[in-house]
Image 1 (tube, rainbow, N blue to C red):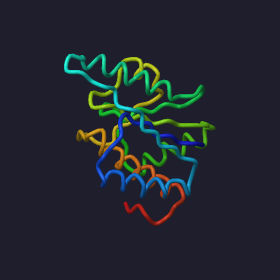
Image 2: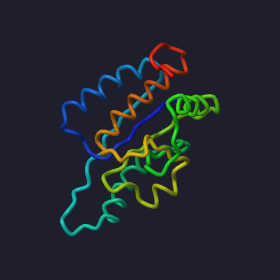
Image 3: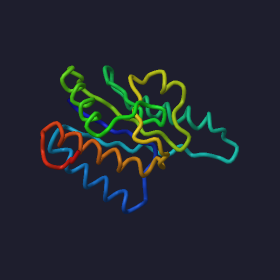
Image 4: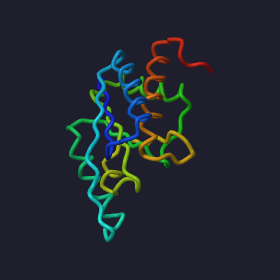
Length: 157
């Protein structure tokens, strides 16, 4: 199974880039993984949030291929422990999913079109994180999931 993380906007924060690189390098030892940063939507002062979400949604949806299993990282999604998330990923692997794609939206979330296309929603916490910092959190949790699946000594219950 291939895994892809698609996000809106680049980051200039050095610590976020370093965290992404660290866990990206680790994840690639377990499965084919792709990370895509889509360009920010150029926002004017008069642009409504819904318009921005719709424009970002079009960019996100255009990154999909037929047959992709789409998971939104969303505050209203299903919450997992790290061990439960590893089981969720492993179940997708066993089920024959060819590619699972995770989306992190922009600062206002996802458009209705993106929600309608989604196969699942996952929440990483009850807390709200910036769409920048959540990238590193997701990378680390995916790496942790892979070590749990392989029964390697990284995760401690």
